[in-house]
Length: 150
Image 1 (cartoon, rainbow, N blue to C red):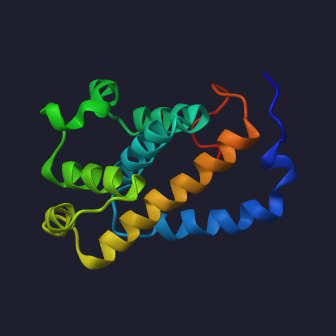
Image 2 (cartoon, helix red, strand yellow):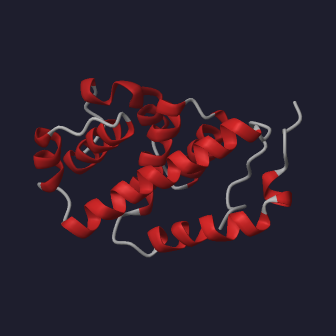
């Protein structure tokens, strides 16, 4: 399968602005494994094959247990996630569905400071942006190599 447009090659000016968001998030107090887990979940919810491939490879490179990736679609029913991760996943699911109940906000605030919650929301939003680009322009799934986008 050929990509519709090679965004990494042809979209350099656009990419520079998007990398700024990633640079900001990399300096945030949110743990990298948590940011990647959230990005994986958003990509799963949106059906972005390229991003699922990328974030699963990055998570595995960070030492993530594959069992958690296999079961993340049923995270509520599994014992594999910490309370902080569960709060982040609940927030991810709510924000991504454009339905954020007060109860979800109250639960996530028990685990995250206001600044962390802003950064978590930005992570979800930025992943959505990348998902939309990759779903539209169709880069070849399976070609991602860990560390390429550092």
